[in-house]
Length: 613
Image (cartoon, rainbow, N blue to C red; front, side):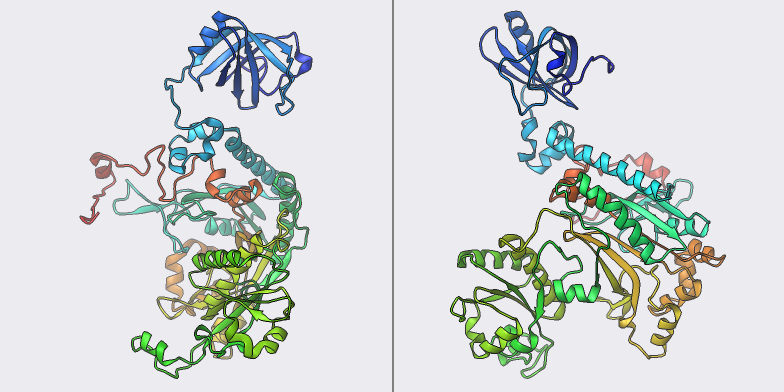
């Protein structure tokens, strides 16, 4: 017996026929057949049960109750004459002797039909999220999330990891995104920050002598929303290992994740160990992205040499007079420009011209630049799109791209980064849309490895860290000294850093950490920051490393993104119990909200509102 009920609404079966029962739940629907006959659907967390009304008095009682009120039903179970094989309790119904209202719904009209809430606009769904979550389809995503987190905890514990929670109120540090700041009442003018990740704390745990740490860690970043990223807060499976290498981290992830994906996922196939390992530069060249979807069999080919200067303006390596005039003095006719041309060949293409135009337009929107195309028809002729510019090089193009009759070629051109981006978006868009190029029903994992340690900043024009400043440069101190002596280009320094990617979604970044203070200082000197800067920005970690730190490595796969993939959802908000909207607002709780002047005074804060707002 559970509380005030004998059974749940998903529990009763034919063997319960004849038993007296008491059910509780929400009145989902009443279907009237006559003055004395009607059918009630009673719903709770576990399922639904049909309650049959067979007398006028009971019908009056039930008709006076609004839908979504909570009620209790006491009655007798009997076998249904018309069974419902689609319903777990479809063999039985309950004939009520007593119906009692436990919590009345005071509204005759609901914001949306509960079982069709996903058809409502997102703002309405988020405002009435407590109603949206009554929809079994929506609720199931949250149940899945609970089960996955429980499975992750069990697996990590079985692998010898200890679950340790780290502070939520900490100090602001430069980690790539905006901090959420919390004013310190007892320390006027000073602020705590909510952690963007437990990065420093988990490394400090390694220096403290803990061997294997993990937690389902809340992280807070003031950044814009997108389909696979929620603004405000998110959760990750944070882990760190002492005396560990990249191989140790890979081994744990490849052991923990595939069984969970195979068990709980929409698809029951997941990559087995070892996952494919793709160097970052190779991924950009071959897939046009560092987040390749290996379910798609399309790749990009460099077609710069065979297609440049073919007479088509965007493929020109020499600036024309027309382009020079358009640049308003930035270029002059005859200047040599860096043009990169990437081609994606789609074999056995049988779709229409209308399909090509539509899909090309989708690629342009996503990539921010226009792709071009041509086809090799069944007669071996180059046709369509920019075909007239390719005709004179027909044999060379066919050879260079290994074309066969029926192939479609989609092309991105421009600076190298843009050409790669167009190719990457083309692979993803055409691969998913053209039959035969995507084995969708699986989870395809891969590691992206060998990330550049440094890059030239777009705004500064100077050397900056490319990703994680805490990563160990490949080759350690010797590599940094070679760069300092001018023996190698700093841009050629790789980091012992890695990303875990699944179905084109980045689940996590991780790295072998830079645990040596001398190497850390030298790495920061490369970006014009000295020892005092390191001490000021990361005092605890720097000092701790000076007391003897073990080599350590870690990673932190995103729980929200994992569950999104497992549920087969396109938006991360579908698997978060109470998500914010795209503008980082909780429209249900009206957050962020205003506070009183007294509260501001206690925190020694004065607000300034821009008149333009």
